Every structure is written in structure tokens, then in C-alpha cells.
Image (tube, rainbow, N blue to C red):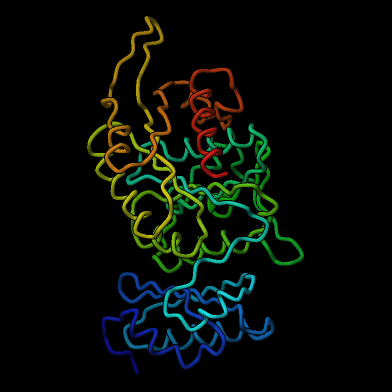
Length: 352
């Protein structure tokens, strides 16, 4: 008998699966489009041998609900230290903070309010600049629909492996552990996924990967402030966020939205970077402010955030990025590489 057409909500799902949870806890639920449901379960308190069966039972229960067209259940489990304070607050209704990643000291989110502002190129070069300062650095590409790290780092066609613990083993590129959905799918095919599947993939790349030991994991966040971004902020123990914007007003409007999202989730905004700030003529050296100038610094000042610096609009940044040899590693003496390094130095001080 066909299921009744019904608008499904998070509350419907919670009510339906709560009796089945046992020791598991609902970490997040996303309902997307015409009834596609994604559920993240924290299974810390469930015996390891029982987890797969529990996930299958809950996924089946969600699939059988009226109004559900597809269901995806993802498990997450991390060990957390027990303290007298946490024991006393065990019955608190406040949502718990995200569990730390094993072997990862700090997580840095590189974000932007909109696409096309050079966020991924900036994330790669900041990560390399942090490594040049002596840090063990990992780089995670969470831009599921537009993964660019394989191209930017020259690792297209490589595939991550799996260790004996069934964890994903990242690719080693330019001395960093790197993972991107672009390393797992055909780069010529579009990724046409609904929100729950995207959410599941991001959680698996974050939680089911052998990242450690790392001083810092740099996350290239997807642009915007939608449900996937919100879910990631809720479920990853982010130390701080850096916002990338170009100087024009339209980009800055979206940058402010991104800043507001992190502030609402109580994630410190470490600062704002103005990308494509100036263009120097390669023939006469005259500087032009093609997209305006100083808008990011003004925005940072208005909200009380740090202005971390400016990155010029330079052909070598684009050329070396397309070649898979980022400018920080290929031409560290250039003005652009020094700009990235100066920003990374400020970020490192804030992280420490």
C-alpha cells in the first residue's frame, strides 16, 4: 500500500525513533526537499557490536514513515573525558559540545558568505603557510558540490585508502594530509545529492578519517550559511573561523551573514581576510582597486573582529593554483606568498 503524501518534519522523526534509540543519542536531523531525511546518531553509549544493527533499524523505521522518500543514518562516536562537572550536568537539557577529533589539537574553519571570492585558494595557501611555520597541518575540503582541492594541490586522480580500523587514510600532498570528495568521485560528473546525503558525507570525512596527529585541521567550508554549514558547525569542535571576502558590497553583505552564523553558534571569529584587494599592472606597476578597497577591514571593525590582511589580485596566484602548485609552496618570496604568510602568522597566534 503506498505511503500517504505528508510533509515530514524533524519533530515527526524524533517522536518516531526515540523509543528505538537505546543508548544512542540524536546528534542532528535534517529534512530536505520532498521527504529526504538524514539522521546523525551519537552511539558512544552503544556496544560496538550492536551499532550497525541499531543504525539499520532506525534507518528502516524512518524509511517507513509517511512522507519520507529516502533515509540516511550516519553514526558518530568519540571518547570524551568524564569530569565531576559533566557528571553533575548529565541531566541538563543543554546540547553537549561536539566531541574532539582524535589526535587533532585545533580546527580552523575557512568560510565565506558566497562563492567566487577565492575561499579555497586562500584556504590552501593559509594551510601551507601554517605548515611552513612548523605546524602539522591537515586540510579537509567540505565544499561537496564544488570540490577544488584536488586541482589546487595537483592530486587529481589519486584515491584515499582505508586502514585496518576501516578509517579513511588521507592523501599526502605538499606535506599535508588532505581529503576531498573530489578524490572519491569522478571529477567529470556532477554531484547531485540531497542534503541528508551531503550531511552524511561531510560527517564521515570529518569523523571517520585518520587525521591525527595534527596541530591544526584546516576546513575549507562550503560557501553560504545553509543547513550543511550549520550542521558542520554544530558537530565539529571548531576552534575558530576565518571569513574570506572580496571588497565589493555584495560580497560583504554575505560575509556578514557568515560571521553572524558563527557568532550564533558561539564559534570565535578569528578575523576577516580581504581577497582580490588590489591589482598591480604587470607593465607599469600602478595599483587599481577593481572590486573596491577596504570594505573587509571596515566590516571587521564594525563587528569588533580582527582584520587579518589583504591578498592581491595577481595572475601568479591563479596560474600556480591551476597548475596544482600553490604560490606559498612554489614562490615563497613573492609578495602574494608573503601576504598569506603574514595572515597565517596572525591566525597561529590567535589559535595559541
